[in-house]
Length: 102
Image (cartoon, rainbow, N blue to C red):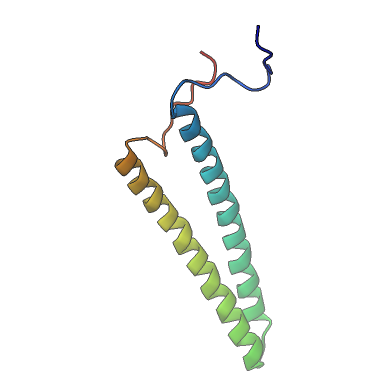
């Protein structure tokens, strides 16, 4: 009789289990990246507001906001990349089968 951990569910045979974990990791990274992007944009906006007539601080604030928009673009591209991988491999990575207990 094999030893099993009741906290870890039995994964279905094949790649469905892997797909589920890829989706969990990707969604977690997208949420964390979205929060980080919003915070970075807010930080850049506050720097812009408080820069006054200091051109160096204004340039740094604009760079922060540009980098925040660039990060948001990468988050959007990650969705497109995941969709392309799903089509190529035939695995539904973005909508995996979430049945844990069978």
